[in-house]
Amino acid sequence: MKYFNNVGKIAYEGAKSKNPFAFKYYNPEELVAGKTMEEQLRFSVAYWHTFTGDGSDPFGSGTMLRPWDKLTGMDQAKARLEAAFELFEKLNVPFFAFHDRDIAPEGDTLQETNENLDTIIALMKEYMKTSKTKVLWNTVNMFSHPRFVHGAATTCNADVFAYCAAQVKKGLETGKELGTENYVFWGGREGYETLLNTDLTLELDNLARFMHMAVDYAKEIGYTGQFLIEPKPKEPTKHQYDFDAQTVMAFLSKYDLKDHFKMNIEANHATLAAHNFQHELRMSRVNGVLGSVDANQGDTMLGWDTDEFPTDLYETTLAMYEILKNGGLGKGGLNFDAKPRRGSFEPEDLFLAHIAGMDSFAKGLKVASKLIEDQVFEKIIDDRYGSFKEGIGLEIISGKANFRTLEAYALQNKPINNKSGRQENIKAILNQYLLEF
Ligand code: XUL
Ligand code: CO
Image (cartoon, rainbow, N blue to C red):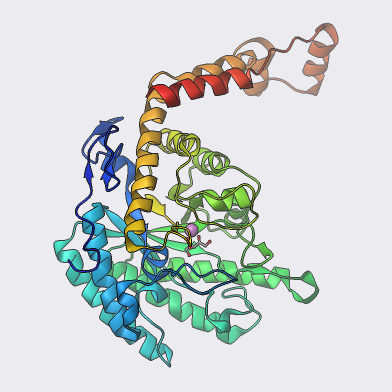
């Protein structure tokens, strides 16, 4: 234990605690809706933001000088890994997530890069023998290096496509080696800048070819992690192909891939797509593809991915509502794809930020569970659609009605009566639950 000497093990102290290094709501063993909080929430630390992020922005260099930043190359990668397992243990998190290039640096050749990875993966396995923390998901970075300038699987350059295939092949082997629960595809530079130089059909067909190859290879090597696609509408490209959950579902259906993928829904990506977090979760849930969550929040005044730690209880409550209604996240979890602000540059801020996120979701879980127990929204919705339970409504949903019978009904049915949707009152009820539980 040498990287975070100012921080001890984070314990649950309850809502009255004034200790910043304690959980106020997250009590891992406490039972909520039939499972422990740890089982319900399945928290995960994002390696990239927590161990490789340095606070740099387009206007200035990094502000976050970490103890491991005194080192370079493989020495730095090893130190980061050691620091990671110290933080996991102190935070008592069950999972973490990483890209290949977060954990090991690129070498001069692909062979050398893979050797670097092998060294770190072997070390990671050693740490995992004595740690409770497992890998929620792994993925590969096919967006940072200049070779991906025109995209990865949707590039115009076949050599890049081949390189990406080699990289994902290695990613799946890594997943198998470490027993990762999921493998994530976030379409980094899979999108376009202008249609004037883009063969849209070829790019999408190639993306589907790539996904089929990944499915086939996972099967071939016996990798059993769940495949997830993480939608995002823009950034880094102007138009990302995996725009939102519905767009991705249409892509998967068209290319005969829908049996192999679920969604990894990220809050800030939802808002960039002009949806809200709950919309993307609901859309995935009702279509049976809610797989996992990147738990963060954006800033409604900014049009880019700010990846803030989630602290908005309204959002965490409605997210946990969808997750509980989904029967949990299965192999998925709540991965903090989030970074402390540039001004929160001390190593302790990594703990404080995670505590804030974990407590916010723990509180959301409790409120959501009570809302479901009392069937608050269910009763409202049941009543609102009551007209489809009898009479002409029942004929419509049971397939007995057609345009002729409906016209005949409409001609004699006057006047039409509507009832209020009571939005403001429903939000006030939600506020009561947030304040009371
Ligand atoms: C980028 C993003 C990624 C993915 C993993 O916006 O969310 O970090 O989660 O590649
Ligand atoms: Co993400």
